[in-house]
Length: 107
Image 1 (cartoon, rainbow, N blue to C red):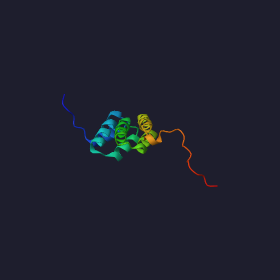
Image 2: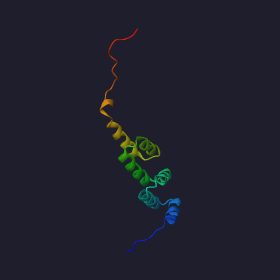
Image 3: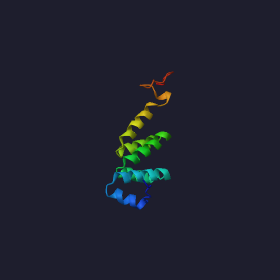
Image 4: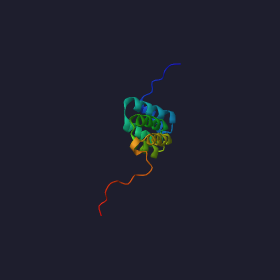
């Protein structure tokens, strides 16, 4: 079977017509090019592949705000990754209640 060379314009036209495979291929191309804004736009269009790719990048860099944004855009795995990273909070933040200051109190 011969490999088909499909241009971006054709993929975009197919994606606009609702073809999810074309949308996924556009996400892969944007990821390869490092085009994060294009990936974000594809996520907004409903591309779960774009959500996956953005989540992977945000989780690798520990970008909690980006994970929240991706989750809010509808990609649930980003919320799970966010929860996982938040569970790894620094040792100093593990207490359940803050201790009152000790020492002399001024009246």
